[in-house]
Amino acid sequence: MTARPGYEIADFNSISPVECPCGLAKRAFGDLADFPATVHVTEILETARLHYHRTLTEVYYVLECSADARMQLDQEVIPVQAGSCILIRPETRHRALGRMKVLILVLPKFDPNDEWFD
Image 1 (cartoon, helix red, strand yellow):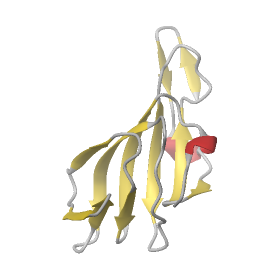
Image 2 (cartoon, rainbow, N blue to C red):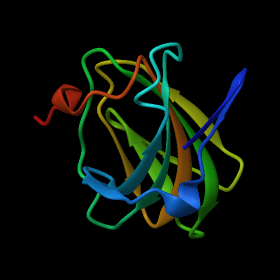
Image 3 (tube, rainbow, N blue to C red):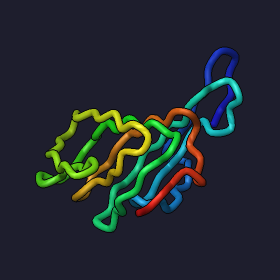
Image 4 (cartoon, one colour):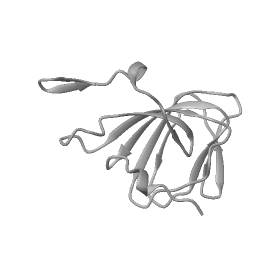
């Protein structure tokens, strides 16, 4: 990440992915005290696990996906396509079904201790 007066730049091409319940996530802006969120680019894998957050709100923006891609949101399964945007509130069980690449805005900042499984 490059700091500039008045703005920050994150190069997702140079951020190393980390494993997460969805697949592999590249996370930016987590270390900035003056920005209340984190931004992730996540490669969703077929092994994505149903999970929820107690405090985090996530906004998923689908960048690309397979034709059969869907999101499970609590008990409902909905189809998604590139350009779909979903706001996921705390306590909502969720997972992606099918391969996809998503941009995720996490508010407040991502906390790995706020990933819960039933």
